[in-house]
Image 1 (cartoon, rainbow over the protein chains, first blue to last red):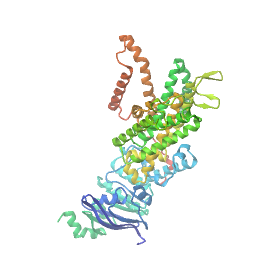
Image 2 (cartoon, helix red, strand yellow):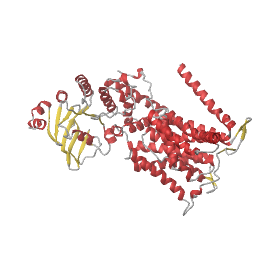
Image 3 (cartoon, rainbow over the protein chains, first blue to last red):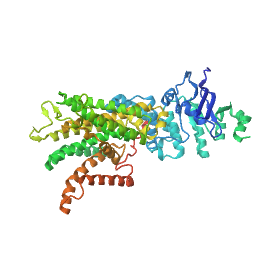
Image 4 (cartoon, one colour):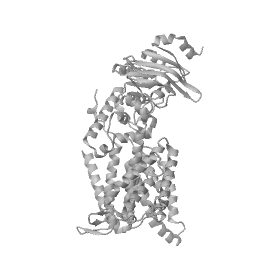
Length: 254
Length: 353
């Protein structure tokens, strides 16, 4: 395996009854790249994310991640391995504050149990402070620290997207998978999002994103894969993908 | 600073009045001390159920089963039935542990269920436990069936028995008053445990599961473990409450652990405000005392008005109960004292960058 390769998907297939949502999709994502996954509606992009993050089981195929086989049998194992995701329709913990949302994200990398919490021992308190401090840092990072004490459901839409990213970052991921992060955003918000994602990459994170905003994908991504009817029909740098006849056909229905 | 002072002086007044309360109550009759003790037990149970229903969002209609487990553990280990007379401080942890085990037993097969479906299974579980208790008198007599277990030992601490009156420093403390102080002590422990858990890593994980289980899984929470932990923790509180119930009553039978008890405890949690510890306490106190007050007012009132009893107190109780729930759903759907965002202190100095 190529040392610069972070994620390798090998012939991933997923069937829902008679529907072939994914058919032998193979792709590789390199360290520190921004990798776009595009395709018409129903092409299987979100299904790919769900299989990758263990939310639904693959019919066949497997993943290698950071040089080791990835166990996708349970979502928390995938998160443990270092893959964090956001959702197409934002899934925050609505009745918790922004800060608490990010603090929950630290669950995976912390250890305090019931006994520590009940006795309030020093180690637990120190860990709790560290969790809070890290959460505040992450809120600063995505630029919504001034809303730390707001309930997640009361945040404006763009901030909810940012909060979801902050929560994902709290799990210390190597790969961040964003499912349509710019959906429903206006031009200003999209531009700000783009700056944020580029910043993530510059800080050493690998980003995989599903996106419909072609301008964003073409401008942001290093490489793009195109899915159509569950099959990968192209994988290349954006300029070449744009000129690919199969891709044009899939989008315009020649 | 004055805020903190206000808080501490408020707390001091609360503690003092709680300490004096049984003396005031026994002036009105020892029955009221007993009623208060039962109310504290219900607060106990509601706080236990609140972990499962309020924090983790798992609708449990069979909670009384854990109460029953705790009660029977105490009854079997401290009564002439098996001739065992273990001290209460030994039995309570056993009861809590066994109840927690039952919690896991209930939790394991229901991990994938939620909402109504979970409610139906837990309801069934509660009934199964009760029916078992009713029938485990054959072939080996374990529970003594519907006749229940009698002559259960009262709590004993050294030479002090909680079953009778004693004199301390010139103050006469009746048995129920001693239980009151013991329950108050246990209750404050339970409240501290609840408060600490709520603001901990585990408590946040429970709330995350309540808010969005799929998102919770995706960010790395092992929902299986965390849910079972909620069931076990909630059940263990039920077990402790059950043990105390046995000791106070001196007699238990399966009849004490029917479905309506589960519904009652759930109503306390819902009425008070799911997830908010103080709301749940308020709900439990309210729903424990109001029926008792009705008992003492409804009959005399009807006797003076109609010189006979037109409506049984029990019927009025259920009527008012239904009315209260309907009104609540209409005007305060999140409970009397709903969970508000706990405003975490936002330390500016903790902010980096």
